[in-house]
Image (cartoon, rainbow, N blue to C red):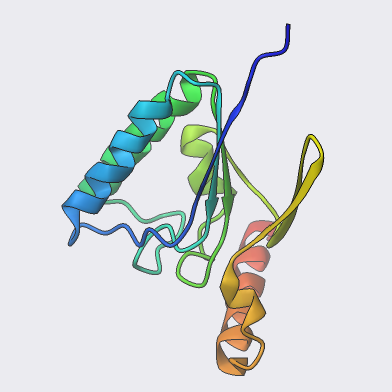
Length: 146
């Protein structure tokens, strides 16, 4: 017997301590789908600030606790970075067994093939943002290699 899977796709939440109702809504979403064999895909701009793996704050600790409970219930969390959170990496996701996926992720579901990516990569005319993202990504990669 094949178990059904629930797929959730979210993007551009821009969570921050300045918007507690939005944070509460995200926590309620995790709780509502915790026992439904869920694969959660977070498609960038999860947070409203440029935070990295070493950022800590009480409001973020609550989110991490809820994500741990979500993944400990057997669910999967996948994260694709956006223009606000591309400094987040696998180290941050390891706190709740999340998985960092490539900037462009191809997902095959039954008869469907879905291309997942955050929209800022398609903004090729925004040369300064594309360059900044390349520089920061390179610096982060260098940090983990050395």
